[in-house]
Image (tube, rainbow, N blue to C red):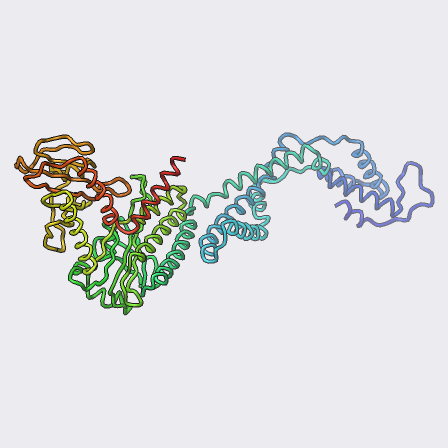
Length: 559
């Protein structure tokens, strides 16, 4: 205002001699005065009223200029006072508000943008979470550029402004400290408030989507690799839905997606029992419980006519039992391309694939069980029990078992011998083979319950050999038991058959002749050796390899 007034004043001719104590009216002196007035007004806006009074007073131009000069000189000698406490708090508040708005906007938008990018681009293109955070920060900063001044305008409307300080007061160290304190408080509080999107978004959603994408890729590779490795026409993998008691597909490389009830069909039976199935001819009479013309003559609309099937369970770690015995899915291959059947080697290969799937599932879900878990999964999968539904092969195995039973009868001079197997679901002992060559049937005949007090039941529950002699003599390595038949001359020797986990999977039962002297300790030792050899055929595929793994694990524990 003073500068405009100075420019508006009429310029008068300066006298030739400047009076002593008066202000020269040269243009240079006027410019210096105007610059000083403007500087004082900028430093101290409160001087505008005194300067205006000088300009409004009566008198000549020289008198008014002299008054301005005197007022300027008086201000130069005045000591500048620091801002008051109220002014400093106002400075702190005015400095905090812009940074508060920036923190809320920047952090909130960064989290929102980052979450969207992490759930879309990162899943589709494989970007890392850090890349999503960087892109989200870039977008939020860009929005911040265009929204600058918004918070200040809102605050100004509500009457929140910085106090009118002079330039000298603004540059004081105490003012700068309060200004920086306000900025610090504003940015911290703003960023904390800007974290509110975390309450509205699912922080695990993106991670879950990435895991599912990883698993889908793995399943596609497994299905394709299993079909190529075993020279099969098709392969598929299904997983257990515990809530619905169903199996559902995760890979559609060979067959479209569908769901199936647990306990129904081949994969349903495997998922329910945990035992593999190797079916050589799905249309054979012994497979009538599995064959379905609607499904197997045109397998789920693929045009594949199913002939042979190999299906293996997939195990995982069970927190309740602390063992790797939880069935989470099944892997199935269909039809050899050359028309042959799936062999024991194919069973071992598929079991190894299932073991790798189990380990990969644990790794993808973030579970860390160490090398011991991997070894247990390999051992558990290779030791999977199962059935090979092949009429010709089953008859050959059945004949071999019968021959073994006859040879045991000859060596021990006994009356009969039977190979019993433990049904884990019904807890029954079923007759698998006998020296008397029982009639073959689709279902093994039941001898007794495992809990029955007979000699075979006691051997299965106690895990020790049980002998029944007429004289009740005690034998080393066997527990004595009374006869349950009522015949005082009844003689019986039962020896348990163990798997690699020291669980009873069968019983070898020998019945002596009525005129024999009874069983001896040498008979117990020989029958125990036969039981160990028969365990290999009862355990299932990979039993010999599992025993090697068990020995290696024992050696490592001893070291």
